[in-house]
Length: 216
Image (cartoon, rainbow, N blue to C red; front, side, top):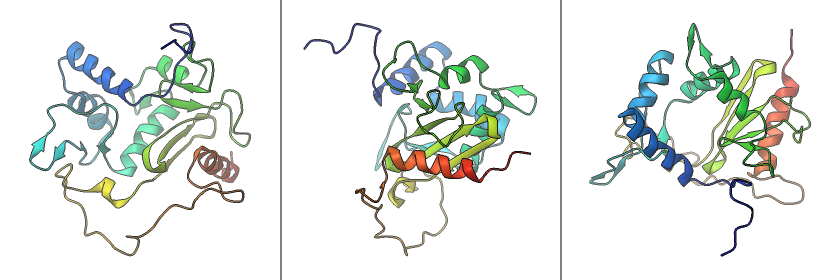
């Protein structure tokens, strides 16, 4: 098949990409992905119980899938986002390199086609008109999204997905007794008057919250 662009001239979203990165990390650092994240992020930030969804019945995956299936408290996801909003610092520790954060907020030379860099969508071109241009966010399965807006000192974590995504049999982390009043809940379908659960709705959440922020 012919290439859609010259080598190195384009990039498209691919879930296996971060999984390949996790394989590289394991071989370079000598640490499993979970161990690396736990030492570099979870322990300094004081995360609660968290894990990768490694259990599939009697089978336990030998390595964490870098492409996803992470289970952690929403408050801990916000701790990570807060760190990104403050130049990668948590208290007096530089947990995330500042140059990495800057690359997340602007165009990648390998992806000039859309505002998407290092698995984050960014607003450098102002396509989300109601949000500052330094905003960047990571969305994924089920409509979840983690937003970072440094200029407003703002982080947002939009939950998404269905209850099955929090099944304790996948992580072996005990969960509170589940409520069943939303067992049959379904997201609003998109149409001419409703944005549904797609990218447009993610942008609208960002715009609405940014509009509600009062900067002193």
